[in-house]
Length: 318
Image (cartoon, rainbow, N blue to C red; front, side):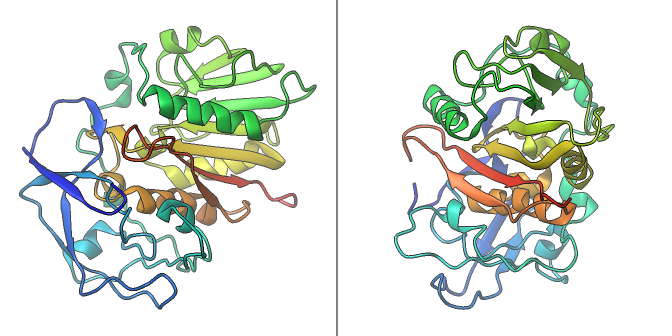
């Protein structure tokens, strides 16, 4: 899947199911430059009449550039261009996507980029509890293993963790505990069933992005396969920076699985490497964070769900 693009035409309306994120955009490029060369402008054409299911878009040639604004893809505007040079021996475009990025001066996305196919209240969509997982077992195991490497040791005095967009499971290492592990999510029944949480908050971040916590409260913030649903990401990432302790770690994980009707349009019309750059841009333009980095922890590329991490730390002086 790293070397080819698989596409299947979908009808305009789909049932609300978790699946591979769909796209409504088709691209043409005059050539695909090497990572070490200057990035050439992408020439894109949007097909509104049909939606396409894209598997692995971005794995073959997307890491060296990104063209984001929906209105620009339709034509007539400026392109958001960000480039990353591939390091020798590198294997993942996602990991390369946030290296040596030259960000535009201003946040490049527009309001329409954060619209969803289904704009009904999220509280309705998540009203019924879903005691299921949204990525497969190998991807879950890879995420848990990653957490075990970067989390503070279990039962470390004074450590607080926020699991944002939480549910009945957080995928923390088995037996992992801290004095304070807060879950913030949309379904109270799911949050009640999460054994790792010491407390929880029910809140729709797309309605109220203000996080109900004091400044410098948390050592770690996690978000598992939900960053693609945030319609006010800059507000939320600024809040994350506020409540993190100096040097605190924010870990955003995602796959290519989503409820596509609830994912923002800029996400459903781009691929894995672009997703890393989208999340990276949230850290960058929110301010107060170290340069974001991407990690590909996919356990079985092409054979199970991919798994990616974009992370950053709050600046010690923020």
